[in-house]
Image (cartoon, rainbow, N blue to C red; front, top):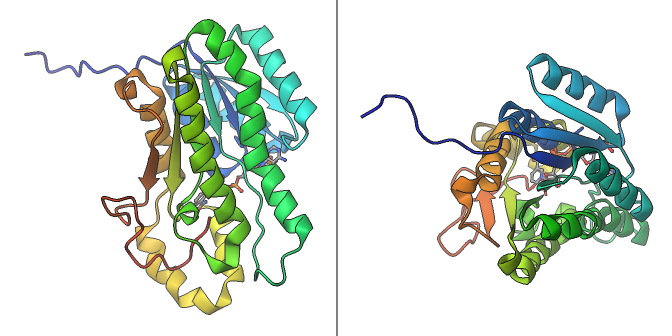
Length: 269
Ligand SMILES: NC(=O)c1ccc[n+]([C@@H]2O[C@H](COP(=O)([O-])OP(=O)(O)OC[C@H]3O[C@@H](n4cnc5c(N)ncnc54)[C@H](OP(=O)(O)O)[C@@H]3O)[C@@H](O)[C@H]2O)c1
């Protein structure tokens, strides 16, 4: 028996589009995909962060390209998808990892807060999938990973817009997987619990009543790399029979029925 591992993730040479690559989770996903030999297209609005990430990937020997965009603008998403396909030939992997923070009591949140959350998450995912699916269908293969969040199942009263979007992302992704499962497309959702990130810190800092709980969950926090590792496995042929699932990435806070059972403390999303 050979001592050399024989499992290959089989991702080398593929192209991925990571929307939200300037964020904590998107950055980790892009870096790990690039490490596997994937050419990664990095999208977000923050050109400086994307450029720094591109440089890091390139210094590590990977390939990354930047496509700055405001994904709340439908035309920008369509044009970006077209440009990426024109330059790389295809997009086989799509990872959606965007959000904005709308935190507050239900009675204080405005229609604008809800609209902003809707546009920055659910509609980004809808538009990007609509933009890349024709190319994936033409190629006869494609993998979509949508990042939702645990609050899609266990609502946080202080962050209802984000949680509502996550519940919608879970359902949307399952629907997409059902619709295209016979055409070589897989679509799965990852629902992280609290992840060590500036985003989590910012949300937690606003939830003053739960300040002590924040400390108690720190040891149980995941890292952006934990999410990235799940993404890389899910998009690889190793997970070729896994389709339409919502994968809880929360260190074991979810029971067999998919219900969050442990005291979640701060619910980031
Ligand atoms: N961190 C957590 O604890 C946690 C827990 C559960 C779920 N999640 C989910 O995981 C995903 C990523 O979270 P994160 O922690 O990485 O958050 P983050 O660091 O705040 O990243 C959010 C990303 O969304 C992008 N974005 C927002 N609006 C955009 C727009 N209009 N156009 C293009 N890009 C836009 C941001 O890019 P620009 O700023 O460059 O535009 C950034 O790259 C989100 O869906 C979040 O809800 C996070």
